[in-house]
Image 1 (cartoon, helix red, strand yellow):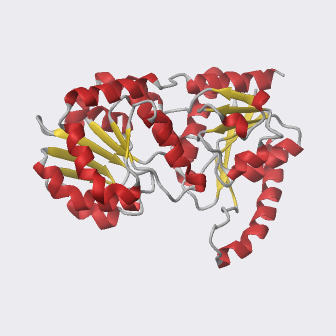
Image 2: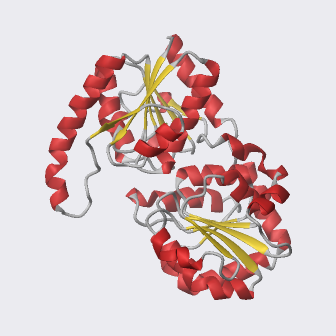
Length: 362
């Protein structure tokens, strides 16, 4: 019976790939035992148990880029989390450790490597985070979603698999009617889906609030996931002017199925999902991420004429113009949807677990 530890968290972009990988391993090895390791007080401590897996938390956060008193506790957190990770490895005795990024995966993967446990890293972005860059030399295998990552990782360890996505998204083209009923949408209107990530995106939310009257004039109805941090501020718009405001969308397959156009951040998980979904997308990348990797993720799609991009600083000047042009051209919407679908790597989760099996069989 295999024992598997998975670590990834901080945001949905690290958590959902880890859960998807665990589900695929479980379907192949029903007797396998799983343990997730996350950062205390982060969303993985809630989302992983909801998916039916056990999780242990380490006392770890990222280092803040600007000087702050929080950074003074960082060295103590690193030592504490390394000791905690070593204890978990000793007690659980995993056959493999899989990291999908986020604070907690650093100390855990480091201790797994030191204990001689095989390690697989799944890097979602076109520009890797600092944790995965530091761990890459000792990892046995690195599964990636973009070309050109040999700039950061040892070439012989890289396998291009794509990013794991939620299973329900693979067949949404058949559920458009059902999805529109699910959200109680009106016929004859363009449906805009707005997703700013699981916690929300301040600048996207400000844009949507500002443009509600404009959407109304354009015959657009809006499904707006504003995120956990912003729900209290924006819930007053729910059910006004053909707008639905959601803190979080648990039925993403329905949300994507209902959408005619999507506005999204360009986190790696969202980009991979949107390729599979095959709807016209306007990316608004977050500028507040390491190495501006969301812009790089988005440009990998935009360069294939498969999506539009508007930078945050250009929203006031460009948004209405670009949005109006898009919804006025049905053939352009179809073209963008078809082009983005060509970039989908639909078997990513299976391919990653194939690599996991190779390491287990060694």
